Image (tube, rainbow, N blue to C red; front, side):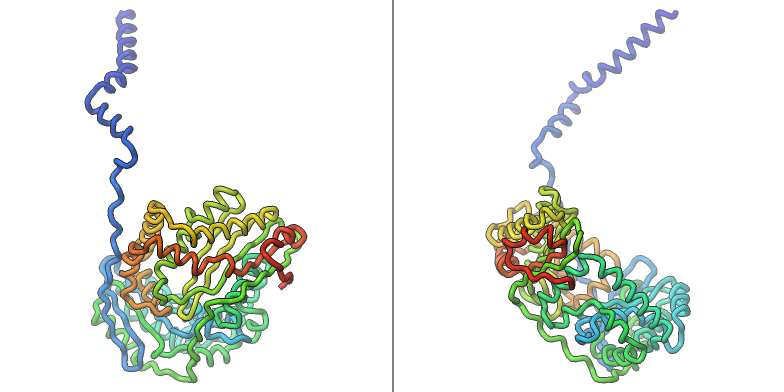
Length: 483
């Protein structure tokens, strides 16, 4: 009996071991093996990218000049609002008060004629939402959201925050203290110093260079100034209200009329932002940071406005060169050379101009080599055609990122408002992906020649002069400063 059991166990083990060999001879196994050995070209390609459907936008301009765009969407029982005010952002700040717009935007929801800061927060939460302001070079946006059942009271609260902020003294004092503390921390960061200096070399005395506050400008801000500037900057004839979500067109327009229909402009309006320069004499700046074990490197030059004809090829060229993890400068400086944890380059596009920027944090001993590699990639973009595979990969990356980002209705509202601020039409939301697909390698090369020529680039380096000055000599004469 025992021998019989042992024989059965051995037979089972042999069968188990031999099963793969037996299976390997079946037709199904042979087909699977052949498929695995097939060349990569046999793998089905990606499906074509789908353009973002152009939303059906209902547009109405109220009697006071406020534009209202309504984008009904099915799905979550939620409504999103974005109110954008053109000409109210950091470009409206004068030379004595840089960074003022940021304080103004952050204090909008900190008290109104009817509600305290805490009451606004509690009312927002009770509606399943929130309301807050933000700023950019070209404007201020105030965003709000709520459950669909709270659409009406949230619209009323949004209008109150936009139209009737009181800037209570205690809240202003707290905001100023926080801003001063944040500035103090930022001043210790080499990237902050480098970016600030680079903006000055790119824009000169244009308002786009004034995006960060100073101790003097923060201290000079008070409630009276905030109220006066609010009256100048917040005007219905320079504003757009985007409403999207689970709401009918008729109801949305009715709510907008009730909340904003009697809004009237007051005060002298802010002057329009002038056009930024498109060229500048390249500068060389070394900002001292004694004892630093790494250098913060920045490159830049004036760029183009968001509405220029070549803006879509410029966006794609920026992605190829330095807009993602697989971009050329990041692959070169991080993956191939090991100089840095991350490197980037590309265009910034605003309503009245833009900038071409690049930068990385690198070890002291490779500061000069990193700059040389940047310039090598810049020259290559302008001299050689991008290959078909690289073009396809980057087009898919741009299109896919854009489509995923704009799946959320709050993102759609934000994209429409931000495009409006920089001068792009609502149709651009759905046109962007098809336009990206139409960009040619020749267009990218032309962009490289025009905007990424190393001879036109300013260089700003923050680091230890003793450790890196010798390496910088081949790039020109650097002005050394501790600012």
